[in-house]
Length: 268
Length: 89
Ligand SMILES: Nc1ncnc2c1ncn2[C@@H]1O[C@H](COP(=O)(O)OP(=O)(O)O)[C@@H](O)[C@H]1O
Ligand SMILES: [Mg+2]
Image (cartoon, rainbow over all chains, first blue to last red; front, side):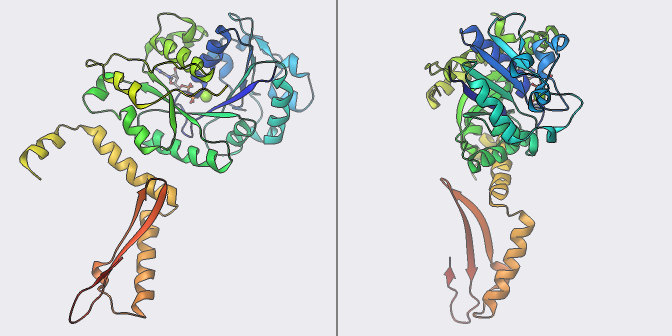
């Protein structure tokens, strides 16, 4: 095995990185792959609660870095999927406890253990972001259809290019088709016009995200969740499948147009 | 702008405004030149140029544009000539 390393980042906080990591992790594991999710948000760990694994933590990423445990001991197995694991962030330390070189070393060791490594990046452009970026083979940039989030995404895209980790791929999250239809929300096309990046998926604003987070189980494992379905499709695109961009039902099928604008490009 | 154009823009909604504002802010972000720094650059440029040629200070325009992946600083500097007005870019 030699895993593909995907880093999920955004610049702005609160746009959906952790949710995306949990959902893509579950989707890829559900496709039959062995997946390890790493929470790189040291001091503000959250991926554990979103995945519903907060009560199983013994060791964390910093314990691995400092040699207090073996890599395998810090891998927590998911409750629902046998081949999904989490390496949690340390909660009582800060970002300086881990260096970009540490992340590269750990990821290289992990590569032999699994098919996919997903790294949940903290917000910002500082050390935590550099840690998450260093081992990445592919970077997913997530944003919301909102001026400040898109602006920060542009900054991040520039930094990713500068580190020669580009071009990234864009996830547009929390789209409200009805608002786009009446011209009060930036459309996918608008954002693609402005940012120099290819699209890999559009996720609608969806209550099932909060409901599944309440439970600690990814929405992508709920067959009725529209956002979950959109995440499953992104996982398939990552896996190299040509999956048409979904028609999220705006009143006039607005999102149908996206499919003609962009082509899926896998990374495997 | 025709009546109909005005109508159409009126119906565009706030997403249109958002996109325009984004494009402007990104041009400045990407170049590392804020609107204020650009203004300061303009003043310096005018001073330098004025040592060599008489220019129409009030009409100088300096703007950042983007063509494909190339950012460009475009200056429009009208000369203050008694006989004719030439524009150079
Ligand atoms: N598609 C969506 N629909 C509705 N709520 C969402 C969606 N994506 C994310 N959220 C919510 O947005 C908030 C921030 O998400 P999170 O993944 O923690 O962001 P980040 O990790 O980027 O800070 C959470 O409350 C999450 O439930
Ligand atoms: Mg997060």
